[in-house]
Length: 416
Image (cartoon, rainbow, N blue to C red; front, side):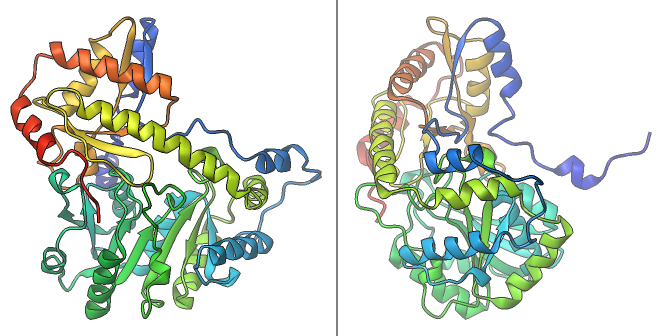
């Protein structure tokens, strides 16, 4: 039998989905599993998008333009303008999800064996995208003790080599929920200009900022117009994860023209999904106001609840709908598997995403897990009861006093 490729062998497994078989086993035993592992909102998608699908009168579902429907791109540009992002439809390439946008961005800007610098922990699939594009990830570590703020610029600059082609950030952040300040983004701008790099920013959580935090887009950074690529998606904004529509946005004409060639190779983004997403742009602000209020309440329940458990520490995020918590356990991945495989409390258990998979550095995040607070508040409260009681009996408990002291020192880290 022929061997599969080295790329296939080394493609990282998703920390978000790798424990699914254990969750299936738990359910087969009749246990309720609270899924805190994946960012699948339970918020209803906008009615305008649903109605657009229901009311389609197409006789043929045709290919769209490889760049996406012109009407959708122009309407999307109007949406960006309302967020002080000055672009036209010609600056936008519609993609099959934000994932494809990032993959196209990497393949467009980087040669094989080039390097990209990413603050870790980061969205785990960045590792997979980089491997697919033949690009090497160079991590620079942010820490839970500092609330996952941007590492010192000097540390980032020390990572730059002749092979460095881009810096990649996620703002607001997945998995940490951190929102970069204007000061942090300005420092990145200066560094990118100094070394003539690209800045690729995943901004799919723009609508999810709390406690007065304001999302500043990299597209708003003066003087960086030719260096910036913005990654976007409808998945979280409109609770339309299954629509698989994203966008690659840049005022660099060469970038968009080159990315279009990759778009032509995959023919076109999905037609029906674009119809729904174009309609979703008519969603009123009241929808987002209600969603924000709901997520703030869910966040407060989850983060405050975690910090009330002996030995657990979790910084208060100001964006997205994730948090990373440090647990007093020997190994968070073992703990997460144990919860599904061996533990239940009153017939219930929880599924979390081990955070070591969100780091590129192999020795980091071993006591941390990412939690998505996307369930209803009643379910979040129940999941906290499960975690609290599980930690009383888990055989690999450690460092309760150390984490307790950390919680006292930084109970709700000020991100800015």
